[in-house]
Length: 78
Image 1 (tube, one colour):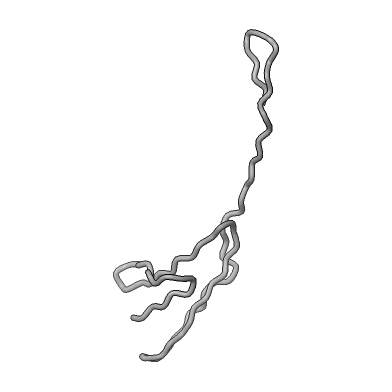
Image 2 (cartoon, rainbow, N blue to C red):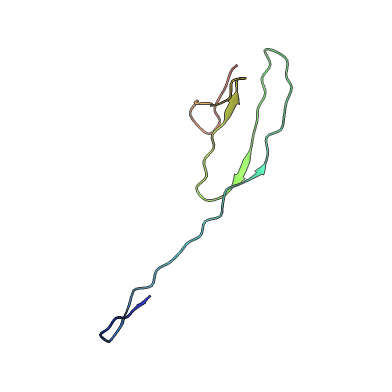
């Protein structure tokens, strides 16, 4: 950037770098599954983006709630 005023000479700032990170995008959606009571199943999703994180949620009939189990592959029972 060049700065000038009433008096000369003007001055120029140091260069700066702007990095534009891509927005997150889901590349593979989880698929719906029907299971019998007492059975297990797994869901998976994959996404692209910069420094992304995942938060699984469950709809308990009264709205969406976060599954709070730790780690990249949280377990949920219910």
